[in-house]
Length: 335
Image (cartoon, rainbow, N blue to C red; front, side, top):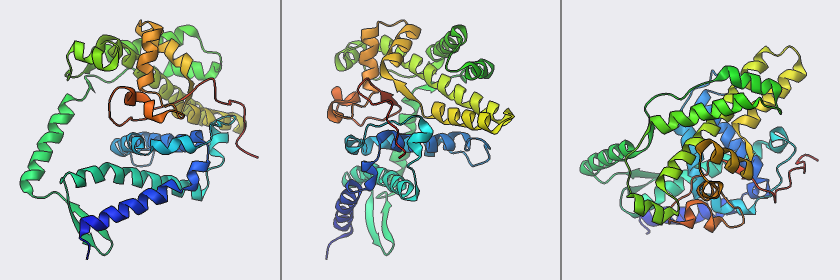
């Protein structure tokens, strides 16, 4: 009779096969990622347009970071992006949502199984499934200390970032034309904040960092701050559109603003635009900025060479989806 671990491994193989056969992979990648990112956004803000749902930052972060375990399936998906985010989401039905929920559960399972194999958990078979527990109390204590030490070396803000909601409201009102001064000031203030207020302990020497990634740590820190500033700009625009939608007098205007909320909370960004803006804000040579942005970019046709896989044997955490020139930006997803 097989032991509990052998049964768990059999379950793992069945899970792998079931996920590979999901009908989800026949759908556009933008539709999948937009639903996941908007769901994560709802965890951060308590759902848009009412803000009354429970908030859980850890759940939102886990939903996004665990995508690294399933990104190998993304190259099966269509590259169609639709006319807008609502068009991309128009194909989402109960079956689509059920597949995404199954995918997120599988991604969590993928995170746990390597730990089981390394002996971090003992396995006990139960009628309803499997019970995983740390081997003993000493192991639990060491794990707690390890997690504490790991958290201490992660980058963290010393102060909250600026929140220029009034300028974002002005930009939403004039979109797609944006007052240059407002945009530059919003990005520059946020970039300077992250340069001055993000604290982290370096794990590599300057030479080792540059040898590993082919760009200097200082350039990376400046581009990272610019990317964080751009992310804040997008979320600020989503917040501003949400506020304006609540004040909108006509239904068409309210509907248009609510769509803008979804566009900014799950933005589809032109890669060259993002590289140019971040390079300008950070004061980094565009060719260097491109190499750094490549670390955060998924190439669906070369997933094994995307992101940090170019440099390290590590999991890549997808944080945004970027539109390149090969993407058909005019095809609609609805019949």
